[in-house]
Length: 126
Image 1 (cartoon, rainbow, N blue to C red):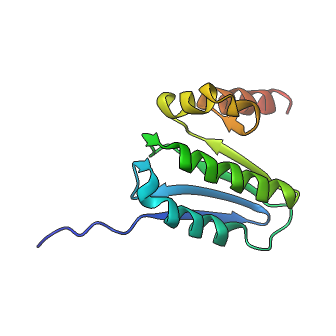
Image 2: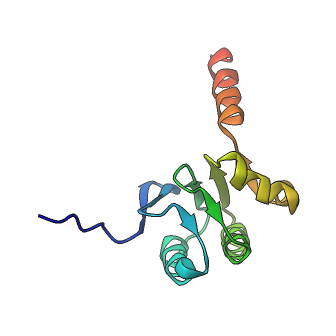
Image 3: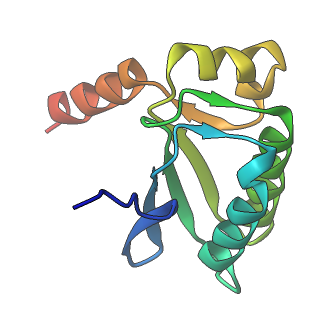
Protein backbone atom coordinates (compact mmCIF):
# COMPACT_ATOMS: atom_id res chain seq x y z
CA UNK A 1 0.00 0.00 0.00
CA UNK A 2 1.54 3.33 -1.03
CA UNK A 3 1.16 6.65 0.69
CA UNK A 4 -0.40 9.41 -1.40
CA UNK A 5 0.14 12.84 0.13
CA UNK A 6 -2.86 15.10 0.29
CA UNK A 7 -2.97 18.18 -1.88
CA UNK A 8 -1.76 21.37 -0.23
CA UNK A 9 -4.47 23.45 1.35
CA UNK A 10 -5.23 26.18 3.82
CA UNK A 11 -7.22 24.88 6.76
CA UNK A 12 -9.40 27.64 8.18
CA UNK A 13 -11.54 27.70 11.30
CA UNK A 14 -14.08 30.51 11.48
CA UNK A 15 -15.71 32.07 14.51
CA UNK A 16 -17.89 34.99 13.48
CA UNK A 17 -15.61 37.55 11.84
CA UNK A 18 -12.45 35.81 13.03
CA UNK A 19 -10.62 33.26 10.93
CA UNK A 20 -7.63 31.19 12.08
CA UNK A 21 -5.92 29.64 9.07
CA UNK A 22 -2.88 27.42 8.66
CA UNK A 23 -1.02 25.92 5.75
CA UNK A 24 -1.38 22.15 5.29
CA UNK A 25 0.91 20.07 3.09
CA UNK A 26 3.31 22.94 2.44
CA UNK A 27 6.78 23.63 3.81
CA UNK A 28 7.66 26.45 1.44
CA UNK A 29 5.67 29.15 -0.32
CA UNK A 30 7.13 29.79 -3.75
CA UNK A 31 6.30 30.60 -7.36
CA UNK A 32 5.24 26.97 -7.75
CA UNK A 33 2.27 27.36 -5.41
CA UNK A 34 1.49 31.07 -5.73
CA UNK A 35 -1.58 30.49 -7.93
CA UNK A 36 -2.94 28.08 -5.32
CA UNK A 37 -2.36 30.71 -2.63
CA UNK A 38 -4.13 33.40 -4.66
CA UNK A 39 -7.21 31.19 -5.05
CA UNK A 40 -7.24 30.22 -1.37
CA UNK A 41 -6.76 33.80 -0.18
CA UNK A 42 -9.49 35.08 -2.54
CA UNK A 43 -11.94 32.47 -1.25
CA UNK A 44 -11.05 33.30 2.34
CA UNK A 45 -11.79 37.03 2.13
CA UNK A 46 -14.37 37.28 -0.66
CA UNK A 47 -17.01 39.93 0.05
CA UNK A 48 -16.39 40.03 3.80
CA UNK A 49 -16.15 43.20 5.87
CA UNK A 50 -14.47 43.44 9.25
CA UNK A 51 -12.69 40.10 8.90
CA UNK A 52 -9.83 39.36 11.28
CA UNK A 53 -7.56 36.73 9.78
CA UNK A 54 -4.79 35.00 11.71
CA UNK A 55 -2.50 33.16 9.29
CA UNK A 56 -0.27 30.54 10.97
CA UNK A 57 3.15 30.01 9.40
CA UNK A 58 4.38 27.36 11.83
CA UNK A 59 4.80 24.77 9.03
CA UNK A 60 6.54 27.16 6.62
CA UNK A 61 10.34 27.05 6.38
CA UNK A 62 10.79 29.34 3.38
CA UNK A 63 8.94 31.84 1.21
CA UNK A 64 9.84 33.89 -1.84
CA UNK A 65 9.35 37.56 -2.63
CA UNK A 66 6.37 36.89 -4.90
CA UNK A 67 4.57 35.28 -1.95
CA UNK A 68 5.44 38.26 0.23
CA UNK A 69 3.86 40.47 -2.46
CA UNK A 70 0.70 38.31 -2.41
CA UNK A 71 0.55 38.64 1.38
CA UNK A 72 0.75 42.41 1.02
CA UNK A 73 -2.16 42.30 -1.45
CA UNK A 74 -4.12 40.16 1.00
CA UNK A 75 -3.29 42.60 3.81
CA UNK A 76 -4.55 45.50 1.68
CA UNK A 77 -7.77 43.67 0.73
CA UNK A 78 -8.57 42.81 4.34
CA UNK A 79 -7.65 46.27 5.61
CA UNK A 80 -9.73 47.97 2.90
CA UNK A 81 -12.67 45.95 4.16
CA UNK A 82 -12.04 47.19 7.74
CA UNK A 83 -10.40 43.96 8.87
CA UNK A 84 -6.97 42.88 10.01
CA UNK A 85 -4.42 40.28 8.91
CA UNK A 86 -2.10 38.85 11.54
CA UNK A 87 0.82 36.57 10.72
CA UNK A 88 1.71 34.14 13.52
CA UNK A 89 4.17 31.32 14.14
CA UNK A 90 6.89 32.56 11.80
CA UNK A 91 10.16 30.69 12.08
CA UNK A 92 13.23 32.91 12.58
CA UNK A 93 14.37 32.60 8.96
CA UNK A 94 10.92 33.52 7.60
CA UNK A 95 10.56 36.39 10.09
CA UNK A 96 13.95 37.70 8.97
CA UNK A 97 12.62 38.10 5.41
CA UNK A 98 9.91 40.45 6.69
CA UNK A 99 12.34 42.34 8.92
CA UNK A 100 14.93 42.90 6.18
CA UNK A 101 12.22 44.41 3.97
CA UNK A 102 10.90 46.35 7.02
CA UNK A 103 7.50 44.77 6.47
CA UNK A 104 7.27 44.01 10.16
CA UNK A 105 6.37 47.71 10.40
CA UNK A 106 3.51 47.31 7.90
CA UNK A 107 2.13 43.88 8.73
CA UNK A 108 0.86 42.69 12.08
CA UNK A 109 3.32 39.93 12.98
CA UNK A 110 2.93 38.06 16.24
CA UNK A 111 5.90 35.99 17.36
CA UNK A 112 5.50 33.30 19.99
CA UNK A 113 6.99 35.63 22.61
CA UNK A 114 4.64 38.48 21.62
CA UNK A 115 1.61 36.22 21.84
CA UNK A 116 2.77 34.85 25.18
CA UNK A 117 3.29 38.36 26.58
CA UNK A 118 -0.17 39.44 25.42
CA UNK A 119 -1.72 36.36 27.01
CA UNK A 120 0.14 36.93 30.30
CA UNK A 121 -0.90 40.60 30.36
CA UNK A 122 -4.51 39.63 29.74
CA UNK A 123 -4.41 37.04 32.57
CA UNK A 124 -2.89 39.55 35.02
CA UNK A 125 -5.66 42.06 34.35
CA UNK A 126 -8.36 39.58 35.38
